[in-house]
Image (cartoon, rainbow, N blue to C red; front, top):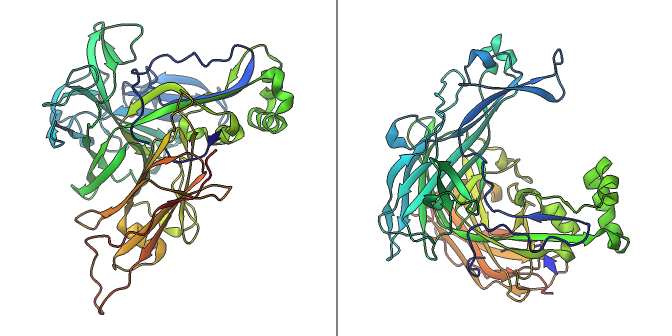
Length: 501
């Protein structure tokens, strides 16, 4: 049985993004699969495109597109909207203010060492635009570690930091300059272990140049990564990541520019899938009802066809599919080694504290195959966050164990609860709809030396619950003078409420 749960750290050995099809149904079926495996060709280069409605229309679907040489390209001035995907270049190339500042990787002693820039992958270049507030767009960068190797035995690591920017009122910018600025749609920072070698159709290539493939592989166990990115104030709210044991720093460089440093270990995430033969749909009336709602006018065609229909959800959008197929979900053979963080979707709920758009408020990371892309919801007492995953790994025997890390800006946490600067303690639980109880195997609570961030972590528990719950408690102060807490004390017991099955 698959259970909505928290998820883990060390998984069985796995190949670097193999093509996984052994689970594909042998008869026409309905279902979904979800994986973090890299999709070739996605955001590997910078680009700018203009989009327009049908001739004479002022709304509806975009029917025309044009490639732009920049966001200020006169050829794109009449486009109804402009979308830009920019890869941030290394800072040492002095191509733009927003850039990749540094990469560090741990050596055999576990100490972080600076990696050296090898080169920036050739890509179209897009100049920054002060009038429209867009950065320089360049290419992925390749870095060489001093002593850290990846699973292919080389010291090569690629950094891909991309921004999706949009201006949905581009044509109006011709007459009103207030409408010219772009909004940040998505931000993602990735570190990939790679090896440059002759192209192979079986390789998953992060990029290809001169018949050389940057083949993606895995991190070796014990590797720790620290990435520093110079980013403007448009990156706010909650971030989401695929990593574990997280620490982060946000250091102002100017009124509009920050150095964002994230240090963490990579994490392994298995794929999941669930399918029902169409001949057996009569046994699953609730699933058929969900499918009709999910697919609307296409549902009848899906069911009548002689093909297998895979909803193919991205992990952050697969929660509803997961819940609909819950009892049928299995882990797949692909297990992806990931180091990534980026922006999420929407604001948090339950408190006005989430409305702070001036800074980063927190970072949520998990190895759950599916998760909610929105921040943890606050119900007045607990921060609640739902994830989902299969109970076992692909062998059907090994329990899939959970990993969850939450970094909270201290001021945000105190805003939620109305706390002063007195020391805090916390409890973490994973609560199932059935209400059983399971102890969390590993938990921790700490605060950084500057008192800026709180870090909460729970690991190594099995999947059988829909919601992770965190509660902060303020400890009684001695005396009358409030002093900032430098150390979090008296960590309360961490529990998992759930039922194994």
